[in-house]
Image 1 (cartoon, rainbow, N blue to C red):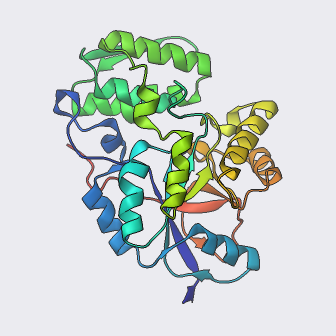
Image 2 (cartoon, rainbow, N blue to C red; image 1 turned 120 degrees about the vertical axis):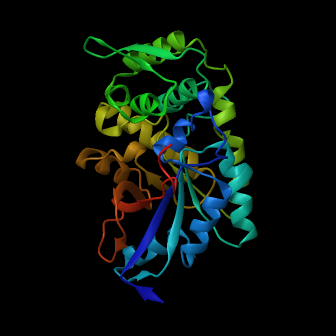
Length: 299
Ligand SMILES: [Zn+2]
C-alpha cells in the first residue's frame, strides 16, 4: 500500500537500564538515546510494516508515493547492534540500516568524544568534576545527583564540548578524567564499537551498513579537505561491502557545502536528524527521521 509518508526511525543504543555510579541512570538513558531490548521490541511491534531504506530511496528517486511503514536506522556502529539488535531483527524477518563511523572501531583507539565523556561520567569515582571551557573559564559541578549529572550530559559543558576543536575536546576530556579520578580504558573503542571485519556479519544477517563519516565530526565545522576525506573515506570503506551506500550526517549537522560533498560521493541517500516523516518529493540527501528516545525520562 502506498501512502504519503514513511517514518525513518532513528535509534542509537540498545542497552540494559542498569544504574551507573551513584545509582544514577547511564548518560545514554538520561540523554534519551538508549532503549532496553523490551522497549525496542515494543517500538518495532508498533511501527507497522518494517521497510528497507531502499524502498524509500526507490520511491523518492521515481517520484512516487512513499510506502506505508517504518524504516529502522541505527547510528554509530555500537557493538550491541551486531550482538543484540541484528539477530533479533533477522529472527523477525526484517532489516535495518546501521550507519557506521568507519574510523571508530576496535582496531583503533579513537572514541567519539561524546562516548568518552559519557563513559567518564558513568564510571566516576570522584563526586565533583571541573573542566576548562574553550575560550576561558571553567565549568565545575557535582556529578553524583540527577540534576547535576544532567548538566554534564545536556547542559552548557556538553554544548561547549561539541562546539570545541579536537584539541580543546581532548583537554576537556582529560580534565574530566582527572577530576573524577578515572581513566579511559585503552580498549574502550573495542568495547563500544564494531570492528570493520564485523560489518560483513551485519550484511550476512540481512542488514544494510551505511556510512557516517570516518571520525564523526560535525561536518559543517571542518575545512574542505577534511570534509572530503571524512565523506569519501567512509563511503569507500562501506562500498567494499557491496551495493549502494547510504549516508547519515554525524550529529545531523549539514549545510549546502556538506550536501554537495555527499552528493559528489554518489551516495544513494543521506539522513539528517531533522524530525519528521519522509514524503513524496523530499530530497534524497536530506531525509528527515523520527528520533526514538528512552520512553521514561526523569529520576
Ligand atoms: Zn552519530
